[in-house]
Length: 289
Image (cartoon, rainbow, N blue to C red; front, side):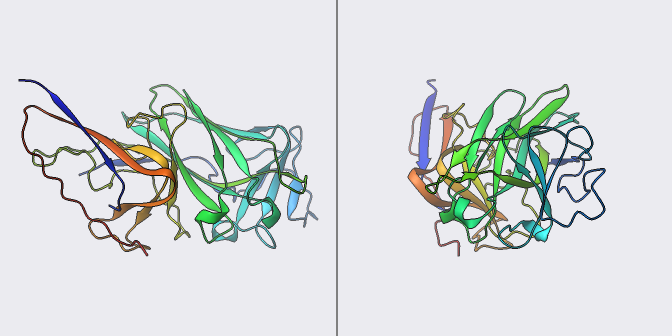
C-alpha cells in the first residue's frame, strides 16, 4: 500500500507536558555585584573584572539598564544592553527528554533605534539573528521564541550584540530582558486527526506583563524543518505571531497563530496517509483582535 505524503500550506488563523527550566536571574532583577552606591544612571556600564551578573557570564561591553524614559521593558524592570562585542551566557542542565524552546524580550535603546536593533541567539547546534520590528507591535519591546532543540548534556545559551547603524549613522545596541526556557514533550497524535499539534497548543511560553503574543520567525538554518521549530510540528513561513486566549479572540482552545507579515506568511505541516482517498480539512479562520 503506497504511502501518500500530503503537504498543506495553511495561510489562516487557526495532554501535553511542559517542564520549565529555571534560569537564574532570568529577568535581571538581581543587580550586578559591586555597583557603586550612588549609581543612579539609567545605563550603568559593567566591568568584567569588578562586576558579576548573578547567573550569567558576560564579555564585551554590557550596560545594566533600568526601564524609564525612552526605554520600555516588561514590568518596567531591568535589562541588559549589549554593546560592542557584548555577549551574555548561561549554562544549564536539561531535565528529561524535552525539546527546549527559548522565549526572550528585545528592545531598542531609543525610538530612533527601533528599526536598527538586533541580537544573535545561539543554542547548542545553531544560531539565529533576530531584529526588532517596530511595525509588528504596540510596545517598544517585543517577545520572540527560538527552538534550542534538545541535548542530554549541559546546554549553553548565548545572546550577543550585532552591529547595526540607523539612517542617522547612530550605532544602536540592543537591550534584552525576560529570558525563559521551557522543555516540551511531543504532543499526542489522535487517530481521527492527521495533524500533530493541530490546535497549536504546544509552543513557546508567554511572558507575564505582555499582551502582544510571541513572534515566530522562519529558521534560516533549518528553513524546511518542522522539528527545529518553536511551534512543534509546524514549519514557519516568514513571520507569524503566537497568541493566547487571555489577550486575543481565540476561537478554540487556548492558543492560535496570527498571520501578520512577510511574503509568504504562514505555517506548513506534512501529513502521511496509508492509502489514497478523499481528505477533508476543517479549520477555523477569524480576526484575532
